[in-house]
View 1 (spheres, one colour):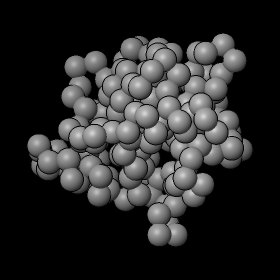
View 2 (cartoon, helix red, strand yellow):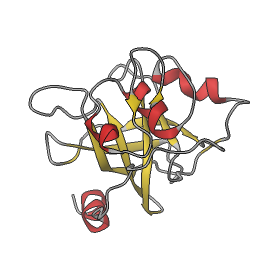
View 3 (cartoon, helix red, strand yellow):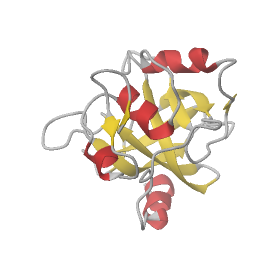
Length: 174
């Protein structure tokens, strides 16, 4: 077993079913899914990564995107990039975003993330939300991306047949 902190996510080696069955907070999920060993609230990950991991403003598969702390996201949010579709559209896999069966905490795989920043620098994004079956109306500020370095991302971040076309439609047609 690849166990993370006590009470956090534990994934069997080589099995991604546990990754997608996880129910809980975004931080233990992102840590287990990316291999990045940072602890604490999501909004603190960006500063904690300084000097420990490469930080940048370009999404890469396996990198963790750090959402800034806001009134709407007082603890921030972290998610793992599962697929790069094109320059301004990626997919992410994360926990504790959309409500599923009336409750939060569930994992979602290959969710559309759209860069809506005026400078095309991934500083502001919109996220696909199950409740509206499309991009939500809120724009979220982003600190950037933390690259895992030698850490290995968990298998199963992206599905076998992710729908790139739907991601592009979500981003550009609505």
